[in-house]
Image (cartoon, rainbow, N blue to C red; front, side, top):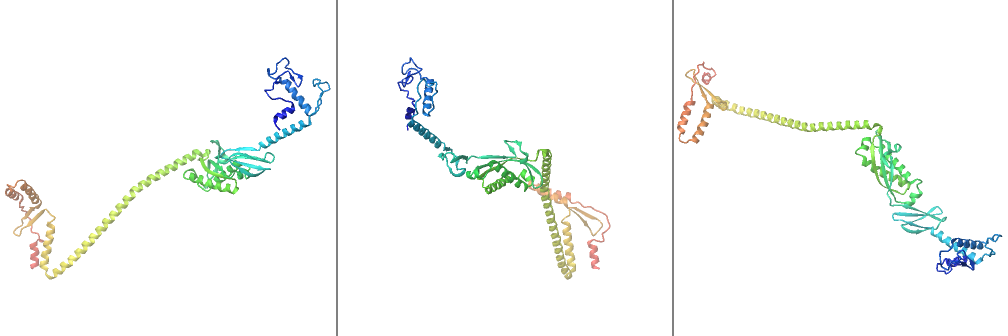
Length: 431
């Protein structure tokens, strides 16, 4: 049924083109706009309201006051057809509004979950969706792609610490203060809604439990310095395993350690210990560097000395072996001809002695005079003579004779004859 027919049955005229809109008479009754021409000026709202109330009273069978408060007009009986039409129209409008309340819109990156009598029946994707209105069905929109963050050990700022969450015990029985954040997304919105009473608190408790287990298995220095990345990774893996066993529908994206430090009460002492450890490491490094410089040199010197000693030993052994072999050969020859062998040995010995000396003493048979030959000066003079001869080829003979006359000197020394001389030796052999 059209709205205009309903207004018509109610006696309301909502057409602005109506020539009687705002006139002084309506249904043959004088109105308050008396003296106005039809179509002039706005309608009297008070009169319209009174007419509307009168129509409603007559529709629902309300009796007029006995004092004629109806303007002296006798009460009219309600129209049964109009009542039914009005009630039907109101019911249709209410039904449309009730059905329209079941529509909902799901944005991109979200998932709609529909409940049927309090139980999850199905999920919907992004876009315009409809469900049966209350009390049959209800809906809830869950942000699936949104990155959620849970903070452990602090709230909002690392200075706002939560000591009950951040203080942990390490494997070497030291207390450490850790603040970290967990980033996660939803991989199953149905499990997220059904299997968690307090979703974020569940993730926070799982994160705290996981990192306490990881920290309790490691030393304090490892957690503070070189093992921070490993602790974060192991905590993320353990959290994912626990949440999967809980069927919480959570996917852990990252675990970030915000601050890892000793408790504030022992921070100064810990800094001193850290500086002492750094000094110890520095001195150890310096000592190791010095050792690396000295030890190879010592090894090299020892190896060189060993090789020199080995070479000297080999030389002595070989010389002794050679001398022994030569002595055996000389002995064989001496047994054959003793005199010749003695002379040969004497000459070889003198040759060896004179080859390394620069002065010669000559003992004469006829007297006790001893001749002295300065061979070093003779050799030097010969070298100078050769140089002068090459510089001046015109005077080689003069320079040579002058040099010979100057260097040849005979020194006479009066001394007794040495019984160990060659002549005495020959005399003894002849005898």
